[in-house]
Amino acid sequence: MSRPTALIATEQLAAILGDPNLRLYDCTTYNEPVPPGSDVPYRAVAGDKTFAAGHIPGADFLDLQGEFSDASSQQFFMMPDVAQLEAAFGRHGLDASKTIVLYSIGTMMWSTRFWWMLRSLGVEACVLDGGFDKWKEEGRPVETGAPRGYPATTFRATPREGFFVDKTAVMSRLGDPSTVIVNALGPQFHRGLERSRYGRPGRIPGSVNVSAATLVNADKTLTTLADAETKFAGQGVTRDKNVILYCGGGISATIDLFLLTQLGFDRLTLYDASMGEWARDSALPIETD
Image (cartoon, rainbow, N blue to C red; front, side, top):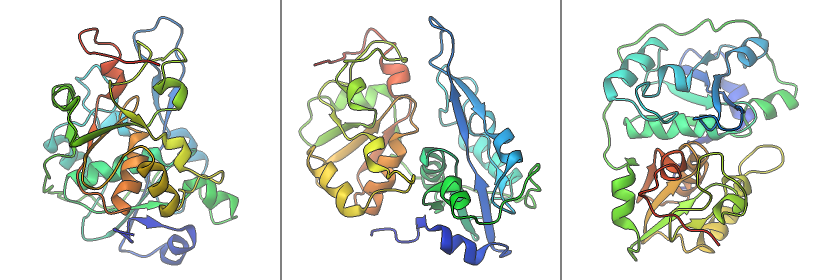
């Protein structure tokens, strides 16, 4: 594993629970359906209610769309400027010198999204394998109520280039043999066989499909590195390529990014707006089977 500290098991977290050097965050968001014909693909709802109903003891809660996204963007979950992120993470006591553990409910993609954001700011964090679902299933301690929070910090980012790209950068890479573009949505959406909630059905031309759902086990833990390597290699995703990941809103693709990073890939980037932008823009090319 390229970054052995990036994934933490429930038993490892249990062993350090209560450590003053631990900073633990629930990152859960829910994408709720909207009426047909709505201008947005879903309604982004913070997971604060499920946090209050039960969370890992000592955890704080991070509201991705509320505090950690660009509110001026038409797309959900877009990366905001560094100053906004520094202020938001500082309010939540995030300290790069501490052990930072991220988790979410239902799917790990919310925690891997924050993991990718933090990496882009020069901060390394851990993601809880299986999230709160596995923690709870194992009968580990749970507390209820609002977050107690951590003492505020003065968070200073060290931004890294190349972690996010826009549609112009993606367009410039279409047909480039040194680049592979990977769609993390399900195969039915990749092939354009099922109506997309994002707009036009289909995929970015020439992109391959490694669905994030195929990289997760039934207990919501991540698949093995060997299995992930096989799935990526089968789609031509190799270490000599520049790899652009996308999905619907730049969230589930971070599961692919997490595993690729563990496998030692280092030429990785995320098309942040993903199909939420691409499928709605008729000036951009789209491909179906």
